Figure 1 (cartoon, rainbow, N blue to C red):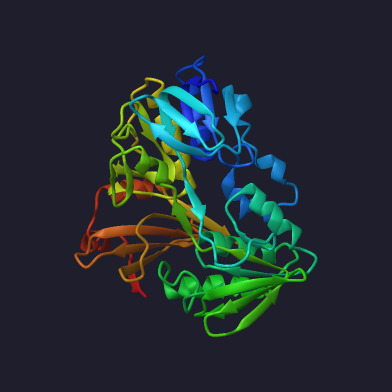
Figure 2 (cartoon, rainbow, N blue to C red):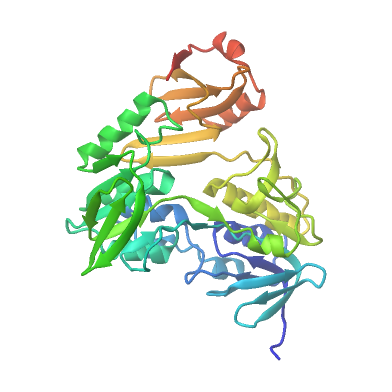
Length: 400
């Protein structure tokens, strides 16, 4: 029988939340043992670079994204390790390869996995999520090869731009009539599209992927209207599915947003914390909510680690999501939804877009190519101003 390996702190998940949880623990406890169980083949790394910086900075390489978690935090890292069960009462964890671990404090940071498209597994069809995925895309891109990208969310839009700037012919399949049509005003959608077209990207709007096949190092993508597209590779940016299975198996309290945690990111189970994509937490501005963005993973991981190590710390950070495509950068707080009423504030450089509901209450703020202090926007949001209140102090123009 395999001996049970014990850690003071056991972290399930090998992403940036786990990396920062280890850092949070070490900020309080310099000596307690830390074990990290990761299903990934690579040690924790800076995930955003996979669709951004690695494609546009020739001096930045894939080895530069390694966070060096094990070395910096004196942690023991177990890669290719799939956790199959958690027993919160016994404080034990079991894995697919028969290993067993016990813990004093546990962090659940299982993140999400990329949605796939039905078809045979191929090295030329990649749903971008991991460093290994990035390396596979590198292998079939560049040298004027043609890559098909499907999906107009953050990953799809960023990788399409990155490929277009890396000597690759890009065919971009978008479900809507415009890029980000459900989030951005029409003028900003058009501004984005112009950047892609100037880089040679060919669009197929109002189309969805129906399936694919791979023959002789070529991918044939079938669209829902019968159109067939050929490329040297296919990259899928179809969103992600959050990994709740372990939380459910462990019997943790959950709601429609995910694993319920308190302000210290504790779950309903004794000595179990959670961070990142999987949690439903009480945001100080937005109320009970969830977030699936990297800033949230980093900040919540660190706070969870501090609390695990005994330093009582409330999670008070309201995360923002961000993207940069070509020379356009944007950040946002709250809800971006074009079904809301949208008002524009033009700045000396860039602009702000405010989103209001039918009761004229502020629901979201978008900063577009603007050098604006995000803490200022957070403070504004915290006051929950009405449209009429903001119109008294800001030059707002309604847009669509």
